[in-house]
Length: 386
Image 1 (cartoon, rainbow, N blue to C red):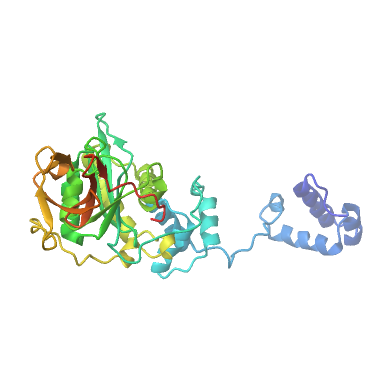
Image 2: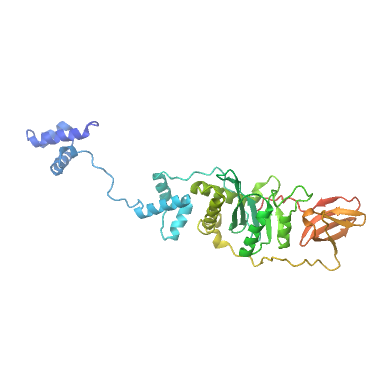
């Protein structure tokens, strides 16, 4: 029988003492302790090598080296990258590969688990189908992230500008308010650096949508149209229309929780610069096959114009100026167009006692020439395919 379950070490000491006395044969002593002669000789040999009989405890069966255990260098690097970025095994594996370190995701997960730094699971469900534009600058998504409170009690409003095709963040700026006066310089700087996009997708929030002028078009919208940008508004009650910028904001919020920037407007802005660089050029993006957005983004060939030239409407067009009250004068009286277009010129295309009003390249309004009714043409975009 084997050693007794309790007091294994003391049993071995007693066995060695009895065997060394020489009063009985080895076979007899082994029978009395219920072990084989092979085991008995093994422990007798170990007793001669031990400094003390108390060292006759169970020897660890763990191998001196494990070919499957990651090297200290790899383990240290995994933990450094995790501490720096807060990412999970999939993205950390891609970063390690850039350093010519081949490490399996299971190995990375084991390292994170062993050190108690397993990433929290997101409560959101992954998208089943992804939509994206075919090329960079075909569509940009613009939105404000939910505000961060400053130590002073004021707020920081992060404004984001994201390319739909590449997920490249063209702008991320912390603003003290939602006013368009602060947004326009951010857009201007982005256009000067990256070029002008073909179209932009926005929700129904300030400052790019107005519910008070009977249309929705704001001065910021007019600024974009003057640069040749087509405006697209997301569907009411459908935030998934701007799914990419919404996901970008969740990543930003997680980054802020991990890095804890100084709670000042300047502190957040410094943090946003660091996050934008990491997001664009370091962080592997799963929707891009673990490429970075910077690897897929290309600058627009359409350049920013500080003073856009006057728009040339087609020959023989009926072109009218918009008065300070946002109206144009037609026979029979004034017809409302848009307050944000005061001082601009618009084109009328008449048909069947009605008229379509366009400003530069975009249709703006429909007029009923009989009743005088005025209806907005630009409306919320209901598709969720962006």
